[in-house]
Structure formats: C-alpha cells, structure tokens
Figure (cartoon, rainbow, N blue to C red):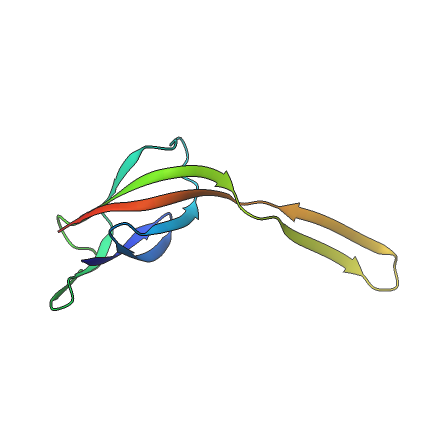
Length: 104
C-alpha cells in the first residue's frame, strides 16, 4: 500500500519500511512514534482513494530513527573590484524517519 502524506511541510510517497530525511521534529527523540493524519492519497495498486484535501480516518505511523545535522552548505558573498568577500556555512537540522504502518 502507498500513501501520499505531508511530513514537516513536504509531501512524500510513503510505503511501509521506507526511510526518509525530513526537517527535525522539535522536542522528539530517537525512538518516538508519531501518527500523521494529513494523508492525501491512498492506493494499493488497483484502487485509489483521493482526499479533498485529506482522507478522513487515514493515518500513517512513523518512527524517528535518529536526529542529526545535514551536510554543510557554503554561502559565499562577494563584491567585484571591492576586495569584499564573506564565506559562511549552514548545516540543516534533520530527522531520519521510517514509515511503520499505513492505516486507512
């Protein structure tokens, strides 16, 4: 069974056992289980249910595997002929999640 669900502001195509990296869940630690109710589409290969905008009573259970920081992204500012340059880095806080079950 597949489901399109909203997690931390993004939509993902979830199947049982799939692993994703999303923005960090604040106040949650590794091992927490969360139920998500923003399910937009449920399908099993033959039939599909489409929500308007979400499906009533459908939910997806996720488990947080770990909280970590992503790879560093460099931000460089520069002005030509002025001798000005600034280099900064940013590391996004992310959570690694696993889809436990899909109910609907």
